[in-house]
Image (cartoon, rainbow, N blue to C red):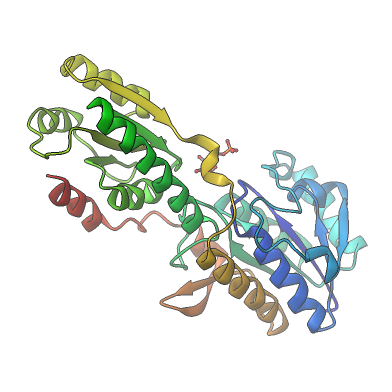
Length: 323
Ligand code: F6P
């Protein structure tokens, strides 16, 4: 019987987290379940800092980026003492279940918490990286890739005007999905991602022979690529092709902010709604996802094993379309 639940956002924030919080709170209230929101993720759980959430507390937030509950990458929660304090908070507040919105690190935390506190936990995939198994899109990814292509379009304008080569670094510590999708959508000439081994020598040869009529060239690099990031790639190219007028642009945290897209708001609402329904239905330690428009529940341990999510065909597509 669910009478009272907790919710937190953890890890890197992502646009759409607020829409998800709103859906969780309003669905819970509809089912007479009390909700408290912990501040700064697992940090709030350790310190027992929370706010009571009602219909009004989540009013006017669906369109806002970031997270009203704030977030953190909690080092303390990685310790035995931290987990024990969090368990105490769960008990003191008499929580029957928890909803955790975050990425793989947050779900690892959720698994530990559930094991020690003995309550069911439902995860909502919230990360711009889209690097979780069990869902087509994580909350934040659609908005982030749209932010990236807007930036790439602008870079293309200036690159064309100066006949320049740009190496653009996008987020993705160990996932290249932001890089790959945005490279396709912006007509980039090449993309480097952590999941694939790239031969930089080949890239340089290709660059020397580029036949495209565009006077500008854009290479998108995921921050976690083995090459070492945009500045390293630029250094290698500059050495081999000193004739190129080359610039580097690191997009950074603008990718994490901004108003969520329509798709993001709708998906985040669906996921939040189903996370509460999942708890009511007795589900535990699973992540709510959407696969081919269907709701799916994936065990948290499986959701964090994400490394097969990159569609390698898309890289070939870039090579052919940009040549
Ligand atoms: O996990 C999402 C993400 O934006 C990654 O793409 C990036 O590597 C990381 O977070 C940056 O985290 P922080 O803001 O803590 O430096």
